[in-house]
Image (cartoon, rainbow, N blue to C red; front, side, top):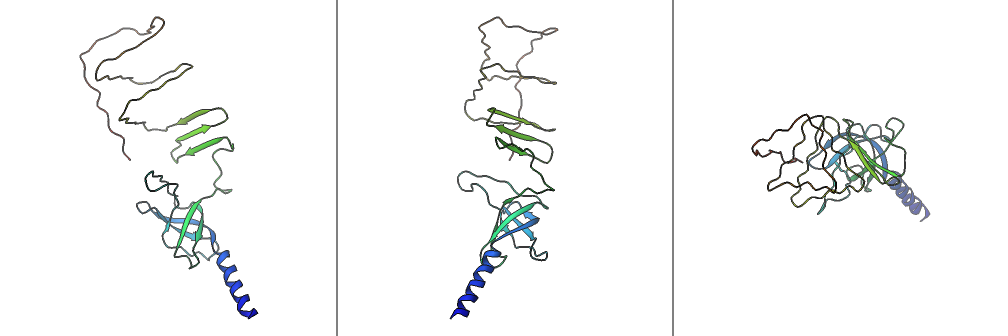
Length: 195
């Protein structure tokens, strides 16, 4: 009787030991949201396609896939490496955190683009490298800056009003320009954002 109990306990310990494992992503299937992972503690064994955990997938959808070579934490059902999930990526001495501040939420991309919110200073900041920003708002938009606003461009700044344009100021308007020209209306053609 004790032998059976001991064997069962050994079996449970073995399942627990292999329930959580660290590995390296070797390939992904972006359309299916899965990844294959080489397990560090299994002599180079590569898992089957494992679903990558996301925050939401039904009505609201969140999507982020690990890169090949990324260290991840996986969990497996007690049937081997056939059924499991990629729980998320983990930092290491080789892949260090981009910031070291618990007050910051930071997202950084391979091309150097980053977005960050600092809850301590209440500031949202970011840099978009060699690209563009496109937003299509199907309703009304309002931007209000209570301490002033600056719009600056090294190129052309265009404003296109489908009806009419209004500028309101409690004080006189000031213009710094070498001259002005008036042209007939021609609409600005914009591309819609792509997923």
